[in-house]
Length: 281
Image (cartoon, rainbow, N blue to C red; front, side, top):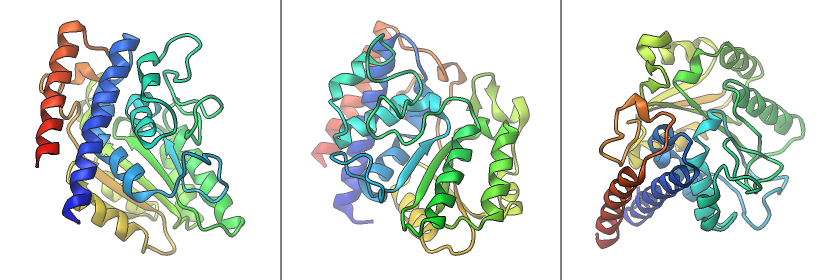
């Protein structure tokens, strides 16, 4: 990957993490852990991969993105704000009554949201429908959807995967944020989904496994996915829950709670230090 682009994506990812922490802190509730683990994927999607225009968010020829693990919308909102869909000041109003940004994505009230999600397993199903519609209409847009590894415990995920394989949806690219933790603890202990790669292959997917924090690997995976014909793609991204905030990393308890004042200050200090270092390089 071009060095300048990689630096831009790292900076965007750090700002996305800052925005996610800001939102959850001001809401006094929300889901920081999975927002932070997916921040590099959000950065790559919105600042390199997908064809979207904040000035025309409903462009019928745009690429689509569905956040199937809808509870991690603080990270998505931060990416959308950074992209220019709405002011970053909206992040501080997350989950506030009458505000734009709800606790789960709302396609009717938030620019840039292609599907309302929250019930795990339903987002991937909607993404499959979008991909099939694109094929039927002869459109060249691509559809992307991000799932969590805990979400793979939902049977609907595999029904949708069967549908995608059956219809040869090569305009569909799934990502799974494999951070190993969910609200009840380690995914391996709750209802271990492994072997994830073999399961997706059984449903007819092209499967890649990458480090979800390495932009060179992320770029290589997405570029390969665009060359796949006759089958859907899935990118299995190994990540760290709470990535970027020391006390949140690999701690299941940060799946769904907000930092207190002291924890917020610590998180923002760490992220600002990271950002300053990146901007100085």
